[in-house]
Length: 349
Figure 1: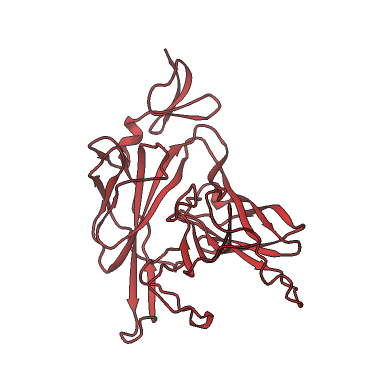
Figure 2 (figure 1 turned 90 degrees about the vertical axis):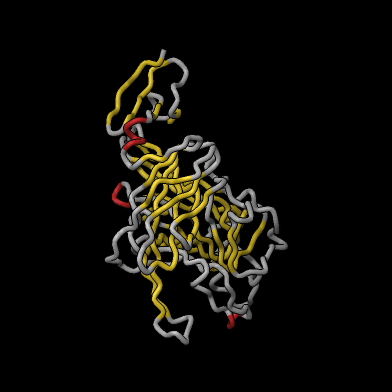
């Protein structure tokens, strides 16, 4: 399930909005028999970013490149995959919401999220919240058989209904009714997690409103946390950035969502577009390849390493409670240290 930023254009003529060269919303992908692209070592590695590279893919119209912070898990448990509270949204109020001019908008491009690649279709904003159709970043949720939990808060009106959809290789949908006006918290469990699952929140408003009393009332996504059970030794991939490229390289000169992480990884997916009618730009099919293997990069060095080498040479230090400390030797004490597929307890003096 991928975004095609400049090809999939949404016609909104019936709603009074002309079709334009705006990014399209994410959508479920079709089953593919394509081969995975081959990711190549990064170049132009600095203390702030790098350029991702891969082999050109025959017939690819574009490529989706995902950047992560990989963390090996030291102890079994429930871990947060992503947390977002939208507190950076700076426009609108419940009484006077903010409506952007564009039907599609990237919240992250506006600097309104703490995590990357949040987007909205017909979005409505009230400071610290967003309504409309809201889509999350792509999340790696392959662990625990694809089972994961979403806890989210909605601020709105009693009786309103909202929908949360998990979009993996399939869709799983759950609906929730606000019990009271104000803040309501909900929990959903899904079982279709994949390497690039995304969530879609939809505000239905008041479904039974014959007197049109709630026509200008919106139910806002206030905060959201996605958690998954991970076992010791598994690798959690925290999304750091997502871009679409049209050649076989993509620059990530700055990475505002890496939050100090220096050991990163990226993979690539090829997007194949087939136009069925040369006279009809809307008549096309899209096929997505599998993702390449991860390619690792350590910022601030001249190098990239292949998939195996970083895990073998770079130690990961954890406290005995499983809290990740870093790659450098920490303060004196007893730590769990993981190198590649080997884990041991070590005393740092």
